[in-house]
Image 1: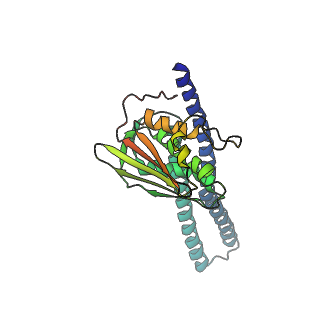
Image 2 (image 1 turned 180 degrees about the horizontal axis):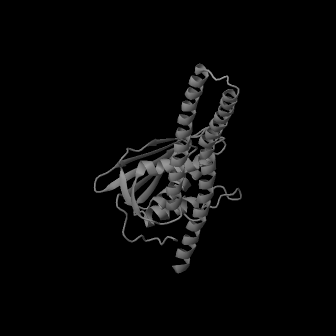
Image 3 (image 1 turned 90 degrees about the vertical axis):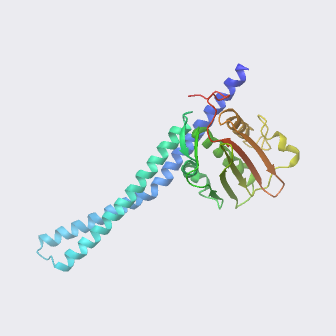
Length: 268
């Protein structure tokens, strides 16, 4: 119905705003290191310049001091170039993720690169934990699809692992792997080693408002949105395999070329 489609669009818009918040946190977290390094190097270089100028004014400049100054200067320039290049690369990655996450733009993209860029924005969620994410996606695996909705799917699955799979645990492991299939399809497996999902509720986890965290902040919409994006926008299928204390695996089968007309209307 029209009301259901409108409600779904509003849910996706809410998820976009949450993704932007995560993106901003990721930008601040990741840029802090290269910019902090560059600032420290610039400060040290400034002190060297002042000391060098004082030696020139005092007529106490020797060849050994000139050589030492030039050596430190070259090292400082290399460090500045390296850290500013790193910052520029990060900004470029974040810009692409921001465009993808805030629009339903279709484009060709490398799956591994897109997932790597997304995970950078999610790092603040793991900052104070021992949880780890490993990727097993071959380079050069290209899709002509919607990277924004795909990133949202993976971000929701990560959020599900943190909120449910790793609840009450200090450590957890997530693995995201992908492989090309025949007939123009790709298989994407998202697996965690969390507490698992009881078999009795596995057929309900994609239902709207179904949550085991009722009253504790769980909305029951995360996996509902995942299912609708996978099937309605990306044109694929998703299934879950899980057992108590044996982790959970979500298997997505996606066409490498998304449908021309998504059955789920996305907000622009």
